Image (cartoon, rainbow, N blue to C red):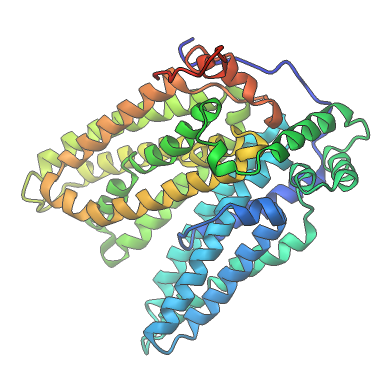
Length: 454
């Protein structure tokens, strides 16, 4: 198979799916709630030095403080300070939560439990949209304070919830807390016999200690496959064209008779579709694998983009003025839009966070995750800045642009992504060693490494 699907490590640790690990992953994934409110930046040193749990707590605390400052802002400076703190909170959460979930979850259920982060993002977006809708109707013009200040709720939920969590065994070992790491591993796995898994974690920790500069190490040849995916997966996630559909949705709902409630109905329906499709991803990702969902989602999005291209071109043309849209047309386009959103929500949406968080060895995990987060944030910003200009110039051609992107990223996934389902996180290197496209990066030559071509 071109992508090396089906490669496994050959190991299967004994494990029980415990209520403790479920609760732990639910609370940790709630970090996605604050992501649903805002976007920001990160750094990796704190995650590695203080641990995943402490980093998550800082994220929730910064976010809550920033929300309070914004809610009571009396001038622009207070708004800026609040937004900066929100950015730090988001950065800390995005840096630590996906890694924490991938490390804490049993490898058989790692995909499903990690995607809970994406699920909470969707819930956060929906709650924010609903809050904005109702606060906008408050007389006196102070409703915006409730919208901005309301972010304190998910921030505090996340911060306080972290008090009931333990750090991941991987992180504890990284900070030389061997006894505590083994005890916590036994608790979250629900069994006493964790020797094989613990020994593998300890070996990974020992290897991580030899690499004192993960930022330099991640640039070396042996980590080339992971580095490429750390950059391209979040980049591709932003090039799926989701913003185009979100832009056109209110127009379509308004034409269907929703009037001034079009924006609310658009947010509600798209969020519900997003939520349900994410549940599908949770139910299937550890059964059918990451590659299957990536490829199926890509094909589904491509077909919907083609339908949307023809539909928007026929009614909106190059003028951008659709006139009176017939109900059947709006229904057709809304269905295509919902099918597209579903395809995104069970593929590139959640997998854009899952796959990067599980493919890195411990020694570079924090640094690599920070690269993933940074690329995601940078291109989220870039797309937001150029989207309107591209829409005004390309019109319906913007759908064609993103359709071409989806084709390219799907081909890349098919050829280069190794299947990671069912592989213990500290055994992940073996899937790259056995992959026909990436194995050459793990073969040492007598004199030096010859730079390989993808």
